[in-house]
Length: 69
Image 1 (cartoon, rainbow, N blue to C red):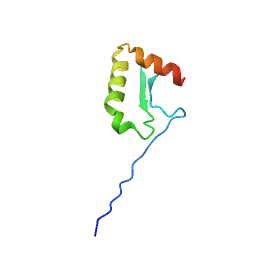
Image 2: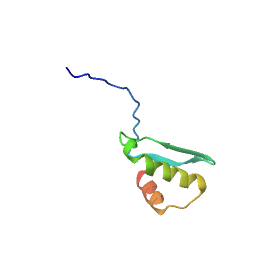
Image 3: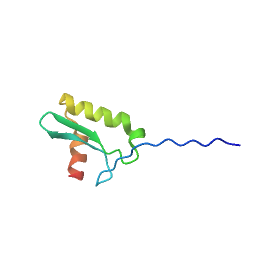
Image 4: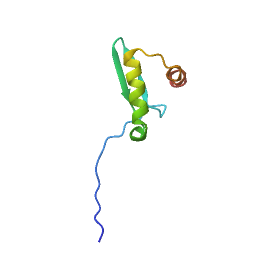
């Protein structure tokens, strides 16, 4: 016999099905909405969030943000 085990987790989605990483108010940053893919993308999402917090310009973020806004 095989043991079956399930574990519940929370998955969040955004309206555009992409993670939302941005400054939402002066000094207030969010990194949310993994849309079911955050585990595999967590390194890139975290790096992007850290760059935003440090004020490091990332042209890719600006291009992606323009698409989802």
